[in-house]
Image (tube, rainbow, N blue to C red):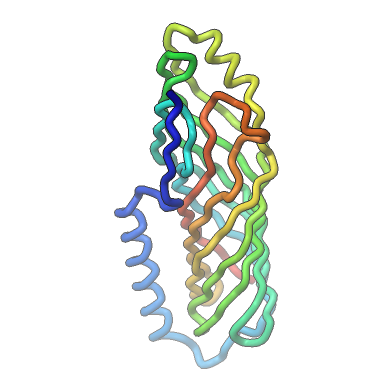
Length: 225
């Protein structure tokens, strides 16, 4: 019998999130204390950044399917377009690795799967700038699947299981949502993001392989011009 487990779109990495929040709070406090008198919030900005993703899946559907988080890389460009001193628009172009380590049952036999998916992510974010040192960001995100690598371990029905995965109808164009914050330290930008898909990985829902939505925590360091 196929199970249908619905989980909240929040990664089960509480320690990681706590450490990230503490780091951002300390940096923000230090930066605000030592801020310069000139306010740059109305300046156009351009930059690049790189860091890591801690990704997993949510809203899983599949026979006994379970997944654990996986670490990947993230890198790209961003543009800051001011709309006054406290608001702005920040589109980004990111190369983002997502994935998971999972296991389940397919065709009556157990399997394990490590999946690495390479996406181009384009978040279109509203900037909220209460102070010069802090930018809060929120908005939709478009993701395009470039490539996907799977490492399997199958049971007795290995040939049939592999065929099921190879015939999977993978969705390449995915819409999602992102929220996060930037800590601005002169030209340096420390960024944290939470992002999750609102569309499943499967195109038509007919597959017997696991169906899910991606989610991630992202931490990057950038340089702003």
